[in-house]
Length: 479
RNA sequence: GGCGGCAUAGCCAAGUGGUAAGGCAGCGGUCUGCAAAACCGCCAUUCACCAGUUCGAAUCUGGUUGCCGCCUCCA
Image (cartoon, rainbow, N blue to C red; front, side, top):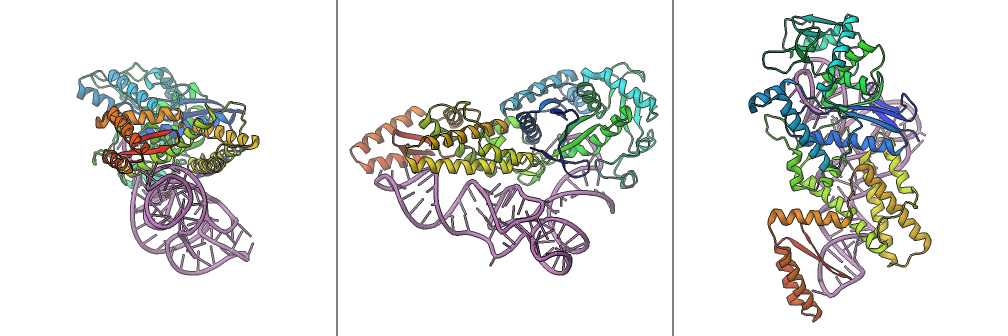
């Protein structure tokens, strides 16, 4: 089956063909670690996590690099504010990043390098760029000369002349061209620095990705990804540097994810509406967050709101409820003997078309409805063929969950976790609820409906909903 | 000012040439002591607007309007 990928370079969908057969070299720009990770980071990381999982499921050997920018002006500034060492600041937020992404069930990349671990490679590449006469030194700073790279602008679709005319750039008299960017920055006293042929300093922002990508994956890679905002200047500059240094294409496919808005506004410092992952998962289950993030196509913007999260939660629970039902009726998870079925095929078809998780989720819901219908109608009396069908779809749902990184818990665990979270947040007493339910059950036994309904109403006031099932009464929080 | 994107029901959203997936909400029904859950049915003759290409367009082309992003740190 062929996979089609939208390539920012060229602006259209292309057939996905790797440099080496069945091997994927993928590099995704990670965060600059000077603060907690926000929901926008989550989207990018989750989207590429799903892409890596999917490609792996299709038989590719995926070599995935996700870096940390651990030396940078903002980190230095933050370190000064906190009166800490900048590497300590970076370490702290790397740890927080891993904690957040772990909670979101993100798989670890093959390599998760830090810029500071690759200083010698960075210096080596800058030297190569000097050899190509595309770099120049001004005191201790080194700049890349965009005029030396005729294709500059090919990713973002801009022309040098237009950009310079745009004049929103601060003119730095040291630069030959206003669009030139730093490869190496000289160190001011007290700043973290490394020895280099140009004196003590640190790498510019863009060069680290060129270095780590080529070092860990090779000079031409298959996928280079990141948020849309990185297209210019970051990725444009990476292309200029790498292709100048190595004289070959840097990346075949450029994949960029869209933004997360908050209540229809862009997250920004001035609005103070940065939504941190650690806060979001206090209110919503991490799987619901993932489910939400994947419910739109990855290139479209997505609007985060309380309502949207509630809908995502309802959707996720609809699936978990079916899984609960299946488990109650057929025991534990379907054995591996149930091969990939029609549902999985449909899902793959959606994913093959530029990783269309939104469509994939639609398939998931249709399947849930089909299975519920079958379960409703047959009342437990299934022919062997029907059982086979059910178990195949059941297995497919779990397979899809595994690609999307959801449905990783048993339904029991999921609802338990959710309940515990609520109990903790609202300090309710489950024992008391159980007691009330027992009283109601007694009342129902003697057909004292008035009393039963009264208890139900009392519980409803406590935001609790009851479900009378054949095997007993269960309760849930309404929220 | 330059570049790019988007516009599909009450809401969210998929669909890029073959006659509108899916979800949420709502309404009617089955089930239930009553509910809930689940299921069934209803819910866009139409895809911002205007022209054009085509046997055929939400999908392609040109134009209009509106919204958004990037060009400055940003996922």
